[in-house]
Image 1 (cartoon, rainbow, N blue to C red):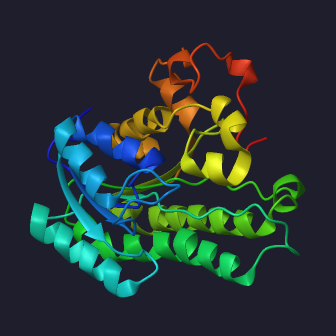
Image 2 (spheres, rainbow, N blue to C red):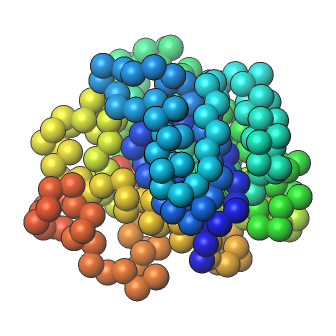
Length: 276
């Protein structure tokens, strides 16, 4: 169960869950190429693509920061070519970049709807597609998208239709890749947590510091993602996986160490969306 020498192309990853996944892989000795927009410090967002790359190297991996936008085809093409030139190929794609807006249908701005579709759905599809020629040459090709199981119930569609469309589209793109290319050695799956995760999106968009305190750390997603990327491919392919279930299958049942505020009872943590 090691990612030593494996090359991962990740969208986003300057902070939060994506960075945690990259650091966990780096501890194995993985190569991480980041395609991310943040090239300079932001007043509300910690980290840049360059600080993420430095952190990966410090953790024991190799890194290649690529400043670009997953919405732009030229940037995707450049990211793939630079990753291959730097590391000799691509073994895994992690579709981490995502935009969230929980506005109702009448209040959701047109530009924000387009942004969620372009980053979440189109970005997932196009980045994976661009990497496919190299994934097909890998002896253990994986695609992992951070998106929820398909659950188009009135409860979730009615809560935030625009965001639900974007996240379910991200999942459908991934499961479609799994069905289309699974027979050719590409294992694709999605991963989603049962509780909110202490990220900038939770603090700045959803619930502020109060919700951050009722969340788990990104490391819980990182440990589950590591398992998904290293366990036998036939166990993971074509599945919509839940973080906590993956860890339970690994024998990890005490999740108290992942609480953003140590000592918080599991029953007090805030449930994430899309799961019944």
